[in-house]
Length: 190
Image (cartoon, rainbow, N blue to C red; front, side):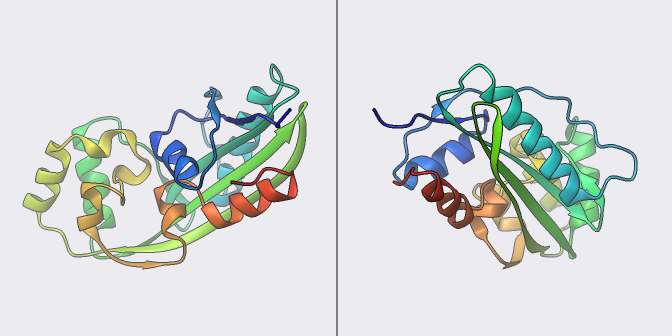
């Protein structure tokens, strides 16, 4: 019997990346408190949340290999989460316009409640200069509201981006080469 791969995420982008890689995960989102600890560095926060999601999803499925991830958009350790509303999205995008920011995605693998692997990948992204009209048009699309940093590079938000240094799939929500390598070490290959 093949090892079941469980994706502990409701992200359609993460699922799509895994499907494109030839994997067929079972989707079982894990809910955890995603409040950053005071002064917590962005990469440490992403690792902590990915690990917590993995542990929560692994407990009821001890026979499965569980993959969880968390993506954080940040400038230094200032975290840009999912905007609460259109006004927050406008403010966030205005702050990111014409400057570099980082996207860190941490992922974790667990089986039977035991952590098997964790890693985090950081990609640098630079937005082009944005006018208030550019921002308003993008916010009106509704796309920014469920995405860290208020944008999705794989969608309309790709037009906001001027440069990417590092992994594109990491910015989408899952550093695919690193994840596939970690899965292969556990015997899961596309």
